[in-house]
Image (tube, rainbow, N blue to C red):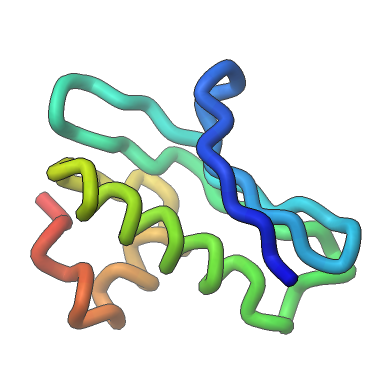
Length: 90
């Protein structure tokens, strides 16, 4: 079971899976969420963990009425491939 949270003190989204934590560092400026870096631990790479984190992150941004500016190349590519969240990118 995955546990997703917005760790506002550290300015990062986190998702726990299999005792490991994937994360996305961000900056929130007004109504814009800048995604600076997305990373998963080596043990979770190739399992889709970063994609599940991005899905939860994007849904949270959508629910909060935020636009996303991906600085991280992974976040940018994921958002381009995700028709449900493509409209959040600006």
